[in-house]
Amino acid sequence: MSDPNWFYSALAQSAAAIVGLIGALLLLKITETSNTIRNFRAELINQKNELREKSYSLINKIDELESSLKEILEKIGNETVGTTGYGLLGTYGTIVVKKGKTDTEKIKKGLKLTSSSLEKWKDLFKNFDEKVDELSEIISSLAKIKEYACFISDDFGKKLEERLLKENELNTWNEYFLSFKNKWEDYNKITIPKSYYLILIILAFLVIVGVIIPLSYLSAYSGCGKTILISLFSFGIFGLIFYFIYQVHEIRSIK
Image (cartoon, rainbow, N blue to C red; front, side):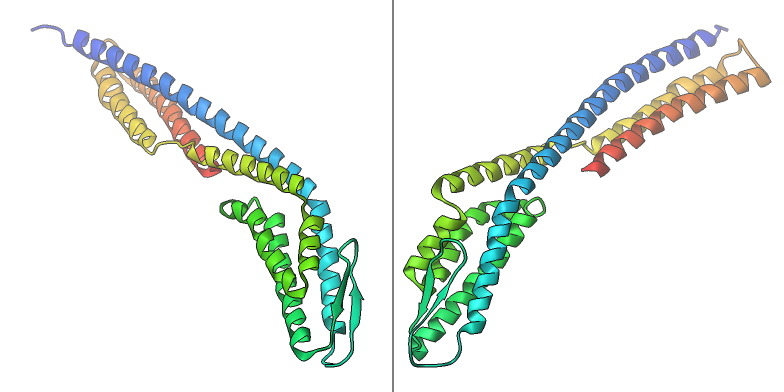
């Protein structure tokens, strides 16, 4: 009867070589993806911090304007006669209220709508990193604020738009947000396929069926020493597989 040891030995060696090759390629891919994700995250954080720092001056402008608009709104009473001018901070000029009932209500409405829109605009600027899908609205919504400000006066609406963001600043902020949004979209395209888990399960199967079991059938060694040796080998190889699983799960949780 022919010796079966050569078969078990060849099977174990072949399976170990296949597992080693697949494991090395998988580890390389996991490492590359992990480094790419971490680099993207670092770039996004830096870009977010730069944008946040740049937005402080604009947010301060909005705060000042909001405060002034609310102050004027409180001062405009229900009188229906006379003409009163209310000055605004900076270069927004003066709001002239001609104490006619229709005129007064119109300006009140314009003040409320402008103030409300500015508040939403400021919120978008403050939380742009959490509202990436709305970034394109930040600049375009300035037109809506101007429209509301024109309820107050055409001149005020024009001056407000120029004061908040001049044309060259508009283009600059558009570029800032477009760059951040593109970076965010590129980041979201990086994925760790769920199929990696299937590959790891297949590797575990190959290790058990192709390596550990054939090694246990070899008769070159027997007794306690053989059991300990195979147990240590199994512990090491499954530890490596679980490390792969942990790495895949860690990368997916980062995203």
